[in-house]
Image (tube, rainbow, N blue to C red; front, side):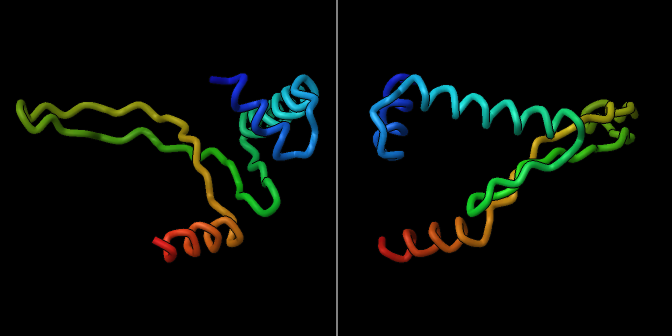
Length: 96
């Protein structure tokens, strides 16, 4: 499955070099992961912004037993699509 993905990506980019396409793809993924690991957003122009939000610890109640406990704090990956991506999807949906 991955090989088909990289092959299609290479063709879309106008190159036949699948190995270079893989290297560029993984370099982009490393940049995104590194930025998010530091708590920073990573903006991909014309696509959107990847980020991390922090959820604080909070009290929760088990509805079956009534027991109160604490939910641990956690981080959540978020993606905010760019206006260009939103408009593209909107136009595609209007064609159906």
